Length: 66
Image (cartoon, rainbow, N blue to C red):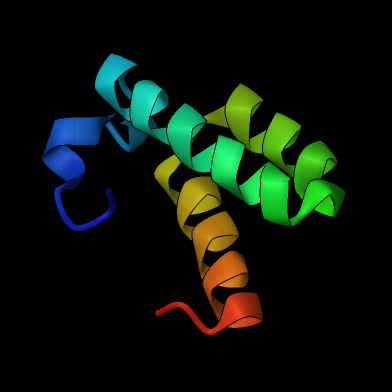
């Protein structure tokens, strides 16, 4: 998502395709980490690349995914 940012972000904010992908990712995150629900709500509202990257980074570090 972040590597192909032109496909998912416009002016550093989620575009429609980015929001679709983000919602699929959110489903997985909330299934594994329901404690992130408030933070995800904030990221949904802002939709900035910085917020999305921060959330994904935190999840990746917690689960040592990437």
